Image 1 (tube, one colour):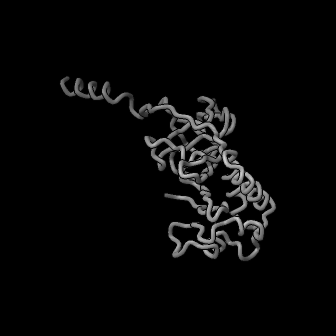
Image 2: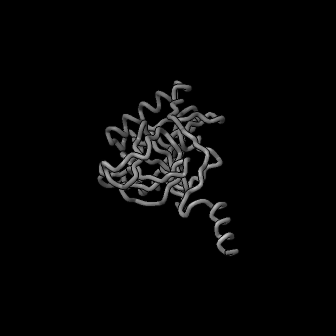
Image 3: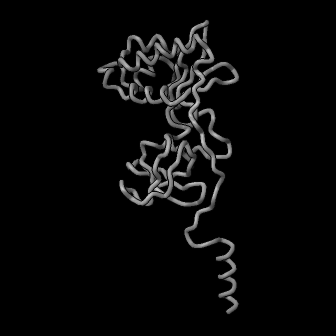
Length: 216
């Protein structure tokens, strides 16, 4: 009887088996601050055009000669960048164009030192959310479903909501909502704060992309 009472007490303290703890709800709506600097906005227009055309010749002059493209690189240079993104041969088939186009489309922030970062959620991620354990549901009214399949019962809809996630490359990702409930979201709607991002700085009165990198 005494043991049963102890177990009951533990259950009351910890909650039902498998229940997840709630956490603070936080959203990160898109931010577009590129217009705060006219020269940068003009530079960005040129960059987006080069990316859209998959034109290596137009892209490279817009990059820093010491651009950082990998944390493990022996040197930060255009040569290393070209090698990293396979731009030396058949450049139009490089994954760079797709990744960079997405980054540039998902909002840009201006920092206190005058530099710009893209996407916006990289620099605006709240400090109290682990970059390794959380992701952003990027989009409006994105369905969170009870099962990893289209047509499954709806748990809720979410707009630019930070959720806890499990590492997975599957088309569907398991997430935990701030309420503690779990569900599944299509991976195409989830963004990591340490995914690919671009950093821009002005050097010798010319704007350049100084970083295009992922990880931490």
